[in-house]
Length: 201
Image (cartoon, rainbow, N blue to C red):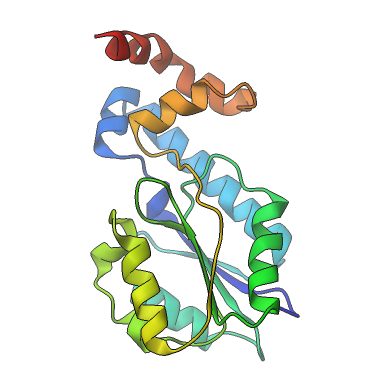
């Protein structure tokens, strides 16, 4: 990945699950979604200034990717990110750079309980774009995507699996992490007593 990539942010992935949204309440759920989207977009903008597009929440993956691929400059790679992670680090950028620099035509970053947080590609992959829309948040997203990339005949790199922040179990794990930042802790902390009682029950 010689040049910084074009980056597409799939905004709809910032929304928490229905279970988590109900537990947080509408206001805090909205704040969480906004914070996750802001963090992903800021990370993307630092990696590729001026080359970040946020997909409309109603836009399909296939359409958003086709538009982004059509707007690429030269041999730019396209990096699609789903803003489900509580923290985006420089290591995420370094890992995908390493995969693409080593000759991979795609690189995939899975979320532990299903879906992806990152997908890089150096060219349009018709078999990937033909996957049904429900693929991207499904528990078997990784298997489907790897199958489509292999069908396209390009080498694929695997990024480390990460925990998202979409479900109650994710909140429990985040609150138990001493490295959780103060902003997220303040937003999630009202659930801590309820989660403790739920686990005990």
